[in-house]
Image 1 (tube, rainbow, N blue to C red):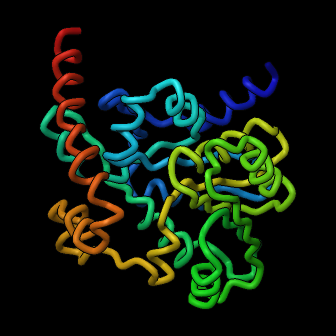
Image 2 (cartoon, rainbow, N blue to C red):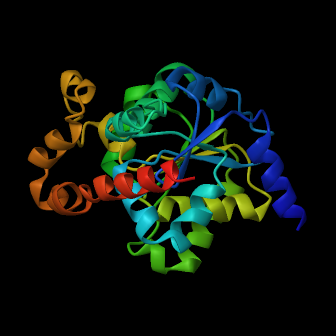
Length: 262
């Protein structure tokens, strides 16, 4: 019970207005405001984490809420990673600021992180770690690589959470995909012993390392980044963008109708 109270206090500390869209909470923060919130975290602060829901996440949260909702509800901040969601919300009369996790990660490394301070990374292969370390001149990066199938290995989730607890850092980048990264973050939060901020940011370090290329800026701005990723990695991305992703329009339509009837 004491830990639940602590978690609630962290969530509502310096609370901001939030928006519920398609059943998912989004905090009313733009990219600069989110970056400043992250930058304010110190090594003495109790652990908390940030999630960046995109279309894929929202579809899965609506499909399997019992698994996903407790993870995302425990987050300190939830910001929108998708310009498609931003557009749908605008059509519905709501405002969502687009705060892509990859952009937030890049800004933290470029503007906030001191190369000498300890940084944790969970996930990412050795080549990615080496490239990011070299690019930003990092001198104290600690890396933990969980096993494949993390979602179904509670002992591995616990080990990743212990890694965060045993290696205090202002920033821990958790890059093992959803919902695995949120599972790790929530376990670290519930330990009551971890410090700093966990960022559930998927493939963000792959972009910084040059392993995966971001879409050109004009495609990002015109909401076509999904098309670029599909063309770049068709075998891996076809199902996400051609089968699962379009389900967002059904979810949006149902949510819009139910919201208007209240």
